[in-house]
Length: 375
Ligand SMILES: NC(=O)c1ccc[n+]([C@@H]2O[C@H](COP(=O)([O-])OP(=O)(O)OC[C@H]3O[C@@H](n4cnc5c(N)ncnc54)[C@H](O)[C@@H]3O)[C@@H](O)[C@H]2O)c1
Ligand SMILES: [Zn+2]
Image (cartoon, rainbow, N blue to C red; front, side):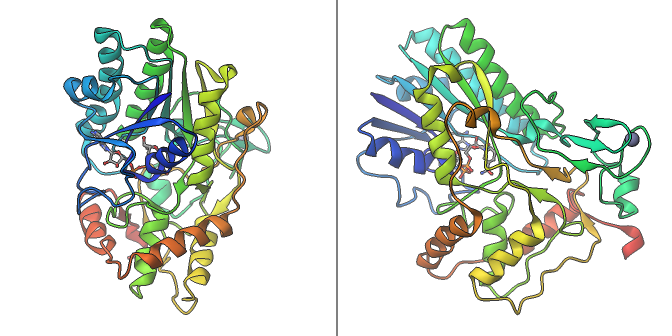
């Protein structure tokens, strides 16, 4: 079998490449070495055994070259983040996926399966329970709520603070950011157009993923790398809101096993699945675990309760039960996964810190704001 891994130089793609080679697959990597993620060019972890194509998913010609002889595709290449390059998210993620399907159809490549990376971002704010009104799918918190520092999500009917629930796949799509919109397009394209083309496809909605090889240069995505590079430079991690917001931090090895599981199981075809641990972890707890890991518990995190990102989800913990019921599960607990990451970053020698500059830009762009009342 010959697998194409797009984005195969990145965090998830590169570990997939290793896992596929270990299983005896022939592997092609299509990656444009996006400069924000790979400022030094081709990373050393791309194995010589893989066919590497430096190319762009926005180019039909590059797809044509990459798809030659390929049976299965793991489509990981994408541009992620909160920055205002609105059209670029759509170009790389939506049009990039459309071009993949177009290239297959135009040149009749005999592709047998596609597993594509979607994201939890498509859910928007998530699922909550009001003690009085039951399950709610609220809208993002308003600017005035952020400004008042009322961080918890309130019931749209009665205004009471609500309990966050794990998010199941049947929650209606409600992502608001260009990234979320582009990922929804990726997902719909592979599931719907893929079905029309009679190619089995799966969309995996990943939780926040971390692990060795997560770019240590990109200050816009990858919270574990962002916090780690701050701590290793003796700077306090900067926490937005009050640090009690929650995410489901999932180790890259588990996301790789979810991809391979979906590739190998027909019952996954033409469906979206959450891929994550389904464990609720506060950002404060993540930071605490990292400070301990790096032996820097003397550093007090910067969490003034004044900074926030308008539109940010408060609690985002997808429920992986659907994929678990078919036989897959994430096995790596956070302390273990962070340990693998810390060992890897230690091997990188001195790391620099790019967040401070990026933070200034994000404040200028209003992507990050400070509560006026708190100033
Ligand atoms: N890491 C997470 O927390 C997370 C969460 C949800 C979804 N995802 C999705 O998982 C996938 C992999 O993410 P990752 O964390 O490994 O990110 P990453 O940035 O480490 O890897 C992405 C790779 O794609 C490449 N790439 C970007 N634009 C490209 C283009 N136009 N053409 C070709 N290659 C391009 C980059 O050079 C990079 O090597 C992405 O689709 C991402 O949206 C990631
Ligand atoms: Zn209510």
